[in-house]
Image 1: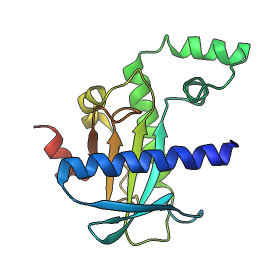
Image 2 (image 1 turned 90 degrees about the vertical axis):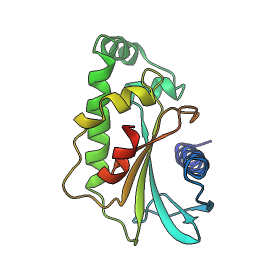
Image 3 (image 1 turned 180 degrees about the vertical axis):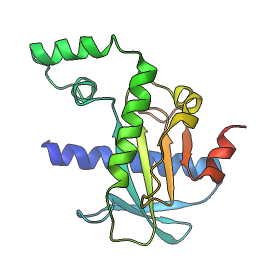
Image 4 (image 1 turned 135 degrees about the vertical axis):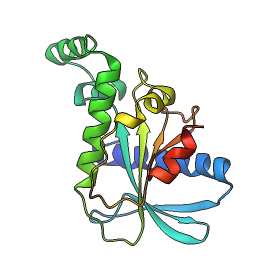
Length: 175
């Protein structure tokens, strides 16, 4: 599988997982995903019979952590970088990585009516609970194209989903 095929598979897996978890939590049907070309969000689906686009992102922490998590062969320098990263507190890396990811995605523009950002946490050092504990410290850009921003708490989705935006949804998470 080449890099682009792997990326599309990861995006589809994340979209399917999010849709299943969202349906379980809210009882609203989400169906029929398909992949889009650039200039549109990664995946489109039907949300209660209305078209909805999903921009998919994976939260690894750093490129080095992503290589390790995805099972890439690590050279000596990459292995040293990974060891150095482990000396930095995981919570600091979590906030930095999540804020950077959201800010990078916020700069994009999409040719669509409705788009949600779905972030799947792929770093086993972080949990949904960690993210919830630091949610108030997230930096949400003033301008971004997303109607809603959601996070899947772990790679398998066992910890469920967490709303990161808008505030009306994030208030539900605090209870």
